[in-house]
Image 1: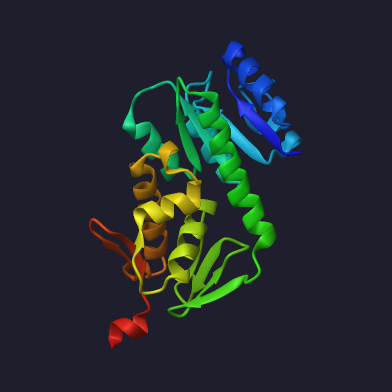
Image 2: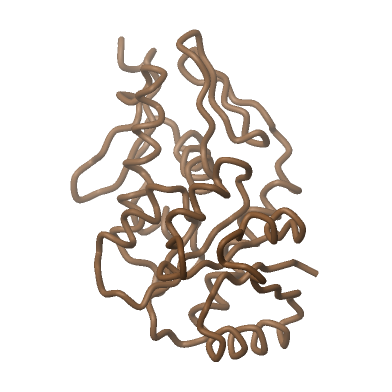
Length: 232
């Protein structure tokens, strides 16, 4: 049974979401003290965090940063604000998905299932742990890539996007195909969500001088490039 930490200060909404998630056999926990969310997080050790942006004392972005400094646990943001920057900020901080309030519960459960399946089934079923790419070692299990310029850690979304692109080396992977593989059902995904995730992956790769190996094909998708093919 997966443990979900629901960081939501609206008591009515919290109870409603918890009741529905319990029906799906999830263990749902709330926050006792919104001044010290990390204490509850450390005690519960959840498999997934659902966090509202507007919270007492500190907002959800603050707690996302705190959680990300300790863990790669999947995070889904909730927001009642209709600001595109909220979704962009969430993804830049390492969130796995974003749900706009008000939402249909079927959409939320679909996103939860997709994230849990992607994160935990991927970790359990991954057979090839290491991939050598342009002189760098990609560790799918650890979620990192390392070369002589250093090492960067990637989020679950970032490492999975990279894995898909590397499995199709020097071939264009369409945006629709990436969305299907990442989120299972593209109807529930903003097209901008994929753009943010890919841009964030490229920025991380730039830290170790590898950003140029992920190419955007305008109107088509993305491609991971092998430098030997580029040299030819």
